[in-house]
Image (cartoon, rainbow, N blue to C red; front, side, top):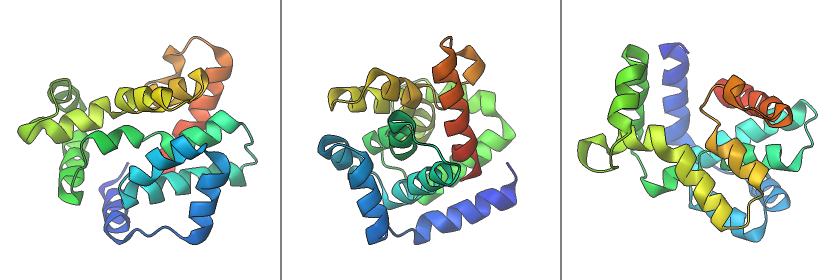
Length: 172
């Protein structure tokens, strides 16, 4: 993704708001327990997730787990809330050396490395949180693998859903 796109994304993150319609969409799709998790996310992550959801809905998607994954794929980030500047640093570091981000992100989420850890580990954290709050195994798998190559997922139906989630996520 271009740095221009990322600059727009940064501006969106610091001006994000959730409309009553967005709030209603979340409550229509997610169980009360999962809605609580969604609303614990930072507003920028909520707005991003709603944009992903709206794209999937505009494409006619109806799979309940896919729509829930659109809303919850970044929920693991509530474990380590990052500032917009930490997020920007991760984006820039990923642009320069994705391998370095992966290497630095495998450790504990503390100190200067917490942004890297959050970027790399939030899918696993989120899947565990969703599972603990009643998410289906398929929903948890979509969250857990949303940053992984879909080709690595063995089940073809899950792979297809993952590709659609990733396409929408990458555009927003």
